[in-house]
Image 1 (cartoon, rainbow, N blue to C red):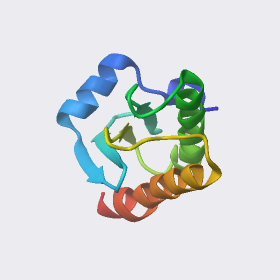
Image 2 (cartoon, rainbow, N blue to C red):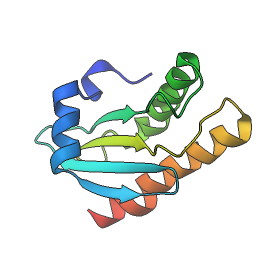
Image 3 (tube, rainbow, N blue to C red):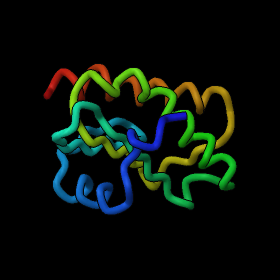
Image 4 (cartoon, helix red, strand yellow):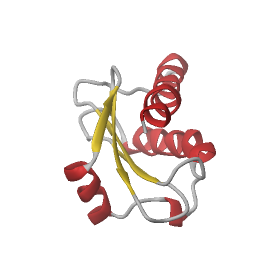
Length: 115
């Protein structure tokens, strides 16, 4: 799990969603906004219609925080990951792998190379 200081608060999430630059994947969108701290901060937004239960939603949140941990000190950004509405998340291994690969793709290929 990600330490609390590396997570965004609700008002900071709204600021990033409003002013940030989006990066797109098939089922998720990253919104990125620079910060003045010496580390990156992260948040994930998963709508209630995308997941069947809160257990699955919290599991995906933990997965996102685990995947984002190596990227904390690479750049100084506030990153909000938004799961698209049409994406249905279930607790299946192939779905977990797909989302995990998309998150890594956005971090490696899109986000850190375009900044």
